[in-house]
Length: 290
Image (cartoon, rainbow, N blue to C red; front, side, top):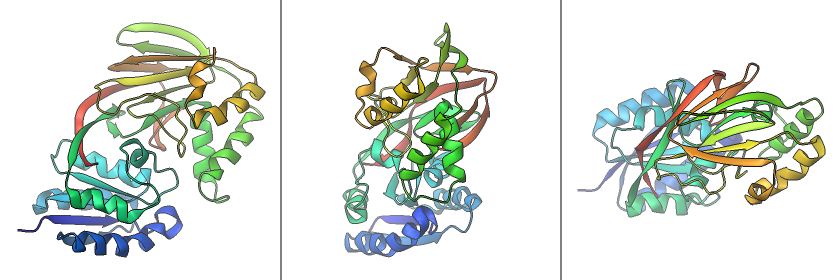
């Protein structure tokens, strides 16, 4: 019997890219011998509801067309369900797809991974009662995230650049307590990021070297630097070469606690709430086509 795949589409992802990509993906899946059931979301709440319907439907897998926000919502239901999860990138950042090796600008190639049917189990973070597929941001980066989410211009990753420049004008270092597997560190920092995978913000390798199936969370702390130095550091984030900077410190562990009196944390680009925040690892929680 042909495998049955639920194709869940957020048509508004990437300013309509989701709607444009969906027919191409469906055609490729069907050409590969799969039976496809199409679901379209009309609001954020639909993603979780539809994902739950798919799990109950007896489908062999799900393909989700959307960005990191859509995938975050889908992961809340699909985690630990055992149902394979295919990603068709159609958002602004697409960091989850980048982290698991899915082609970002070729929906046919992304669909081919689902047709091939090879799966693996990857880790998820857990924070504020939610599964996190990429990175928890806390500090300068979370302020950038907040500003970028509110912007309608420019499009794509350029929003993060503009938001970064805007936040730099007034940002000052923050005081943190970072506890990793019981080891407590008090420090001032520009930001503290915790990831299962390496990137956020559309490819910034803040947790460069993070492995998504090693059972560990990677912590990156950027100690106080001048605004000019922080600005100069951002191009290095795209390559992961910031890790050689003396102000950058990294840690790894299974249980992380972040404390700071004025910081709101973001996970997968979504608001998690004010610190303090406990972040743990759920090893092998999500099965993906990859």
